[in-house]
Length: 85
Figure (spheres, rainbow, N blue to C red):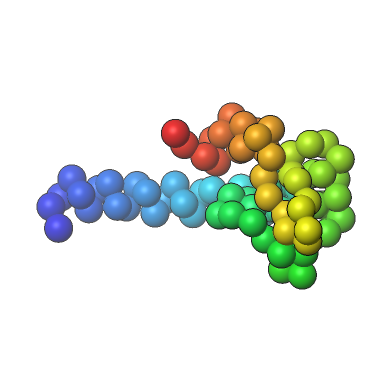
């Protein structure tokens, strides 16, 4: 692996570690981070109470037992730096 590629890989690993650490700051943020990768079944949620709060605030949608980020949830995660275009 070339030196610039190693530097990029190390930087990406550092960014991922910082993001993982930040995800644990609040139960709601932790729950949003779980939903970044796609729909999550109710039984696999980290916190149903946090999910309920996120649904009330419009950041998460519940559909037939599945939980997904709403458009506002995606915008929020993008604005705080957890998603990139």
